[in-house]
Image (cartoon, rainbow over all chains, first blue to last red; front, top):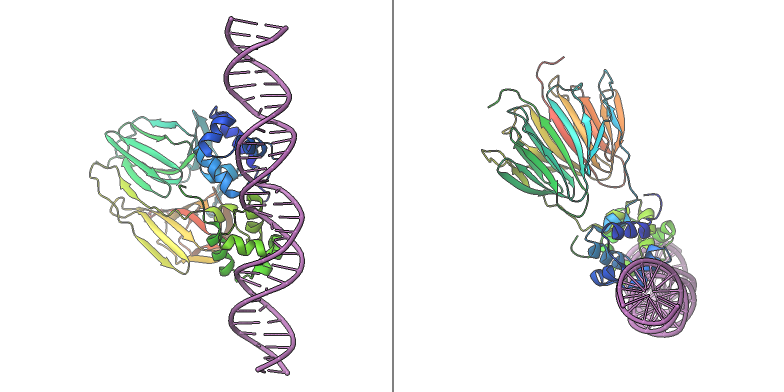
Length: 190
Length: 190
DNA sequence: TATTCATGTTCATTATAGTAAACTTATTTC
DNA sequence: GAAATAAGTTTACTATAATGAACATGAATA
C-alpha cells in the first residue's frame, strides 16, 4: 500500500450498500453521527479504535475499510516451452472464477481462484464420476455442500470432496470470500 | 476480528526484529519518538494515519500491524469414507510447510501451504522427471527459481514449472509470504 | 403552505492524540 | 568513578479527534 487508505469512501460505500443511515450506524457502532459524517467526507483522521468500532457496526473486517483494492493478477510459466496459459475470468451473480491452469497444461487437472461476493453461491452439476475437488480458503469463510454432506470452512482451512453429485460453495457472510480450488478428473476410479 | 487489534505489541515486535531504535524509527516514519513509545505501551489510541506512517517506516503492510494473528487451521474431508488427512506441519529456517492433502488421498498429487518468513528460502533437489509444481501466491511476494529460469511473483499470481531440476522459492521481502503449492507427480511424461 | 419526520452537516465544547523537551536508566570511555 | 553517549519514558503543551446539540435540507402528509 503506497498511499494512505481512503477510509471515508470505503465506509460510505458499504454503509450505502447496507442501506444504513448515519443514525443507525451510529447506534450499532457506538461512534457519534457527527464523527461518521466527518470521517466519510475525509474531514478528520480517525483513530484505529474508532474505525474498528465502525467495522464492527458494519459487520465487516477492519481490513475491508482500510483496503486499497489490490487486484494485480499475473500468470507465469517457468516451463521450457514457456507457454503462457490464458487469464480467463468469468463473472456471474457475484461469483468470479479465474482459471489458473488450463487444460493445455495438464489434461486432468484444473486450478481456479474463486471469488465470492457476500451472500453469493456457486452451484455445480455432478461432474464425471471420480472427479474430486480440493478447496483451500484464502480469505473469509464459505459453506460447502456435496450431496448430503455439508461443511463450513474458513481462512486457511482445506477440504476435499468427490463431486459426482450436485455441489455448491456458498458465501453466507458479509465479506468477500476467496477459495483456491483444484479439480482433479479421474475417469474411472470408483 | 472480534477484539480490537493490539497494535503496540505488533509494532514493538517488528521494530525489535529489525533492530531499530525508537529514534531511528521516528526518523523513518515521521512519527515522534514519544508517540512511538506511548503506542507500543498501549497508552494511546493512534490514528490510522499515524499507524500507516509507522507501517511505511517499518516497511510492512498496514494490515501486518493491525492483525490479530489468525492461525486456525482445520482440515476436512467430505468424502463418503470421511477419512481425515493428517495436519502435518514442518518448520525449518523460517519456512513452514503445511500438508493439505496427503498421499493417502490421491497417489500422485500433493498440496501444501508454504509460509515463508522474511528473507527465508525453500530449496528443493530435483524431483523425479515429469514432476510439476503449481504455485499460487496467497500473501506477499516470492522469487521462484527452477534451473536457469527465474520469476518474481506476488499475491494472486500463479506459476507453473517442471521441477526435475534444482529449484527454490525465496522470500526476499520484509514481510511474510504464503504460497499455495500443488505438486503433480507424473512418472514418465517427457 | 405549513407541519412533521427523517436525512446528513455544522457548531461549540471536551477528551485525547501527537509533539518537543526534559528526564531517567544503562552502558561505555577516559 | 565522573563524563559522555544512547537507549526508552514521562512531562507540559498544542493540535485535533470525538461528542451532543443545533442547524439545514428534503420528502411526505394534510
